[in-house]
Length: 144
Image (cartoon, rainbow, N blue to C red; front, side, top):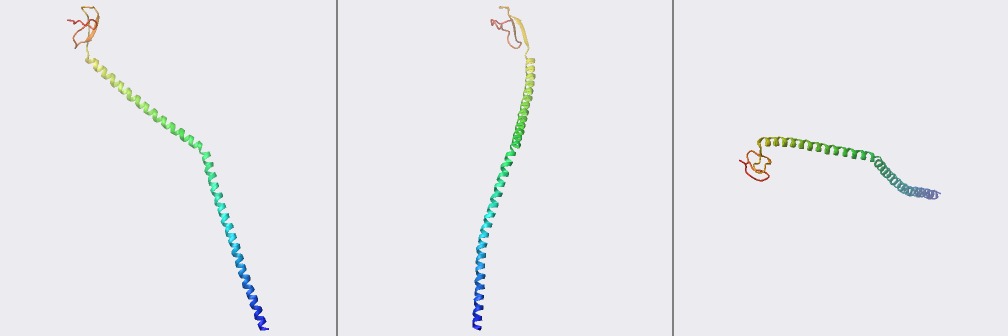
């Protein structure tokens, strides 16, 4: 009877060991399946996040054309202002040059003394610089 009891205890312990080993194996299988499922879930959530980010960027671009158009209008306004300022500076420089030219012309005219005479040969009225010899512009005769 003691041998039978020992044999029964051994069988019970072996059955428990087999059951524990089967549970471990089952848990490993279950864990690997759960781990694979979790990895798939994690990949799916990352993909959804990436898609959301992509959609947010697209929506931002759709909203931003107004900002871009306003910025382009501002750049055009600034460029127009620069062109106008350059034109005004050019006009001011041109006016300054014209004033300088007028002063130079007045100075040159003050140096030139014109003399009026009537040609003795052809009786034509002439006007000539007093520093030059008196010669008729029409017939070329020298005057005394």
